[in-house]
Length: 431
Ligand SMILES: *Cc1c(COP(=O)(O)O)cnc(C)c1O
Image (cartoon, rainbow, N blue to C red; front, side, top):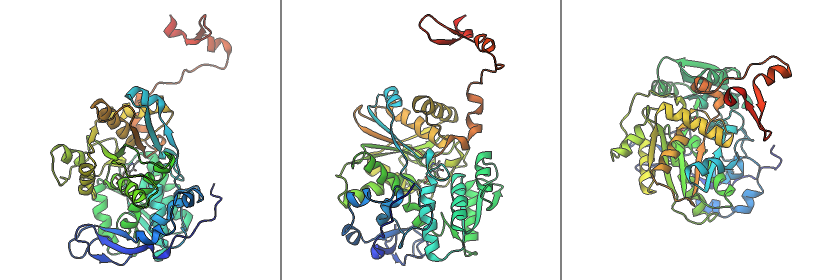
């Protein structure tokens, strides 16, 4: 629960938006593409203004949510939406680490993010708080699943109209995870890339805040909080390695941006954190470009159980490749069976039930470890971004069954026995 009164960030900390390609400047409005070169726009902060009143103590005294980093988020007043998002646990994964030969493996556990159990609550709370500042009455999104859940929940909280667009073949848990908040859900016959194309057309005709289209520059900034929190939770230091899943590639690039900002502002010492990306083999355009040493990403048609990462034409793929190259990172991709193994491994080792994207991250982490990417004493942080209860169909056929008995001691003892050490064993195994 948030108990702290929110400290108001400096209002003049945002200079505007800037094109990532040609550097053209724009007002900080709901625009996302450069008129001159069609490059993506990014929030341009005045770090001198922010630096005047930003330090560890201020963060530590702030609210118990991602809003303790409001000074580095693109809102001008106090946030209005998603006040309890973020500050999820950073778990020292001792058991999984032992298996992989890593003494300092950490899991950033966004399976328990509030309110919709994925990292998307971070980007949505920022995007909708900004959309409210712009005066929008309706929010929308093109989603691979989790984004729609989060937009639906936050729109309900903020009392806004809500239209979410999803591929029609999403997991049942993710469809229900929209409908319960009673938005308008558009199930599109097509994959995410079709949904996104349609939404781009709608966004240019309707006065709606599409969180990941016209307000994307603000939305994307929310992912930096994954880096801010991690550094604070590690005792104000950057990790040696990051392993993060990639769909559009936005989250992966913004973790790096977040670490750089903390360094620039003097909250952490400079460290050459190596950024490693994870994809599903059935939708691995960024990892594939990395393997082929290409500068640009070639779009693919997704075919994977990791639906939350199934973006065939990733908007930030080019920047993800750049981040990987400049940090001496690696990219890994894993098959559907490896994704299922990854989900089970994390659950059995650490008691964390991740969705398919988490299976991608754990499977990739395992491959990177086997390839000798890490030193046993390196600090490695793996980002687990979504909850397994939303993608139950992925693992349903790959877990055991309950032992069915009637409610009597005899029935129990017909199945189990105590050995001489006092250990209870299933009878089938002792026979
Ligand atoms: C959306 C999503 C991601 C990554 O998204 P990017 O588009 O790369 O920022 C990762 N994990 C989960 C569970 C997601 O829903």
